[in-house]
Image 1 (cartoon, rainbow, N blue to C red):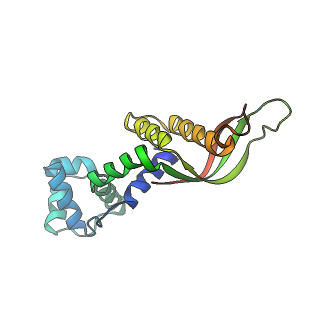
Image 2: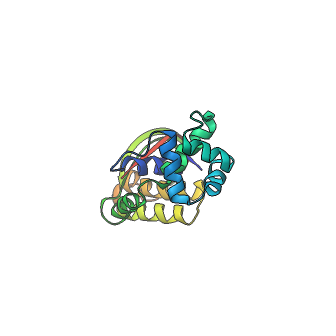
Length: 184
């Protein structure tokens, strides 16, 4: 996973209408309800089915940090899927997404202008079209490079070209990302 994929995951969790389970036992019980068997949960988090049952019963309360992190990630990935889908659909059809980033942009520009790449800090609202393309590419398993291309194209059109009012021959590339955040 890359910077953009991680940012989309974080944005998904911001829209929860209820808090996910907090205790280890509640998290494991939630995973058991979703995945149906202790063996499936064990395969998901990288432990044995017996360990899953110990966590469920409360016989074992403190897993190693790595396992606790995997349990938390598995719960967050499955928590409130309809809420997530509704927010994504709304962003892709009506509201769009807001991208906040500090990244190095590379430019291909007409002769006589600067094309030096440099770090910029931007907060830009991208229209629903770019949100839809970003979500579709992610669902199809596109890599970080493709997601960067979509975001760069959106930033190019909305921020750098100002909707076609300036910088007609400019091509923007998103190179080094210092940080990247998305909200929708």
